Length: 230
Ligand SMILES: [Zn+2]
Image 1 (tube, rainbow, N blue to C red):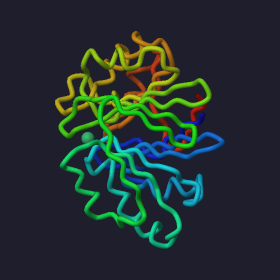
Image 2: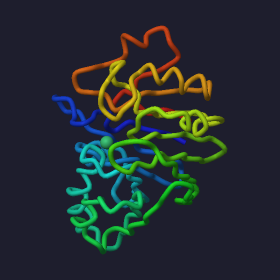
Image 3: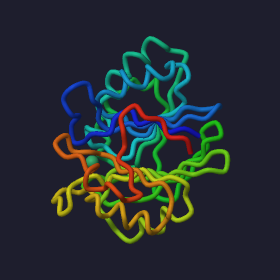
Image 4: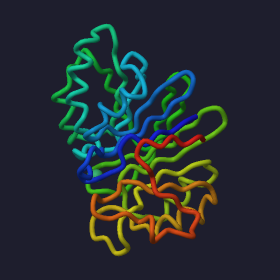
C-alpha cells in the first residue's frame, strides 16, 4: 500500500503552489483519497486518472478538508458513467453535500465503529475530538495498516487507536501550546510511544514547520508530493 501526501497544509495552503489536506492511498486494486482540501484536484490527477478514483473519505466538514470537491463536480459531470464513493461522517453540517451532483457520487454516511471495504482497501472509522464532528480512519490492505487522525486534539483514546498499526499520519504539527483544536508536535511523541512505528505529522500551519524542532526524534514531518510505502 502506498500513501502520497497531496496536500499537507491547514487551515489554508501555504503560498506558492501548495495544497490543503489530502492524501492518496493506492494499492494495485484501488485508489482512495483521504480528505479533499484546496489543491487536491491538480495534485491528484497528476497521479491517477479520474476513472481510477474509487472513493473519497472525508474526515470532517471543514473547508480545508473538503473544498476541492466542488471542482471535482465538473470532472464528474464530464464522466457520467462513473460514480465516486464518498464516505462522510454522519453529521448534519455536511454543507458540501448540498453542492454535489447527486448522480456523480454515492454518498455513504459513516460513524464510529463502522467499516467499509473499497476494492480490498479496508477502512474502519473512529471518533476524534475537533470543533466539527470528525472521524479518523484505519486503513488496511495486504496485511498492513495505517491510521489517519483527521483533525483532532489529543485524548487518551488515540493511544489505543494507533496500537499495532504500521504507519500513523497525525494532525500533530502545530507549535507546542497551540490554542486551536489540533495537536502540537509534542503529542506526536506520545503517539509514537503508543505504537513504536512510523509517525508522520501533518496539517502544517503555513507559517510554522516543526521539522527543526523534531530533529533527532523518530517523528517525521509530511512532505507534499512524497509517497510513503506502507
Ligand atoms: Zn478541521
